[in-house]
Image 1 (cartoon, rainbow, N blue to C red):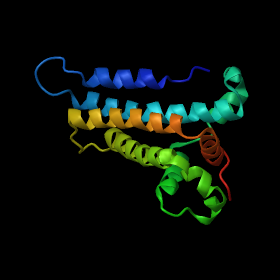
Image 2 (cartoon, helix red, strand yellow):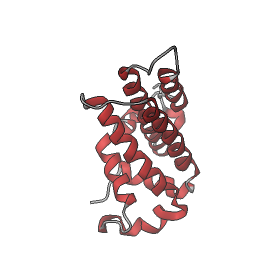
Image 3 (cartoon, rainbow, N blue to C red):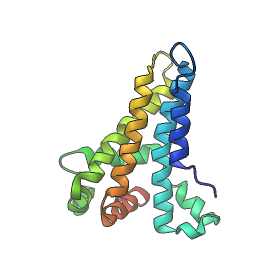
Image 4 (cartoon, rainbow, N blue to C red):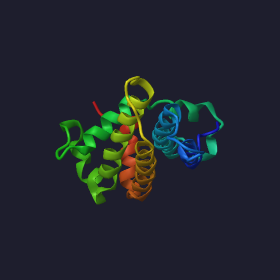
Length: 169
């Protein structure tokens, strides 16, 4: 299985908005750049989950794809929205201390939700008019989100991925 490379998606986004002559970038390019910024983070999380619970050495096996495809955009948004709250819902209470340690995951969660909302608007809102700065901010936020995710304590990141793949009832 070929996993989309986050850095490649972010470079693609940067190329789409790079000045190429007079005038602003096309709206289509700005929309694609914002979408690519979100997808860089989304696919990184999916790969992290499948790597953690199936193993990166098994990327060509059907079980890896099964785990990778388990997560949808809503599940990721819902978990991240929960992490943004000052107090977690009862079903997450047992995990509250570990999820909030170091504030890396809550910081990641805030940025992920913003990126997803931006991607949704860029992909589906025909009335939105974007500027190069909107895409530049999205790309920067994606890089920061990836940094927060990578810098989270390994046990917290593993718990986050477990809750994403195996939500408590």
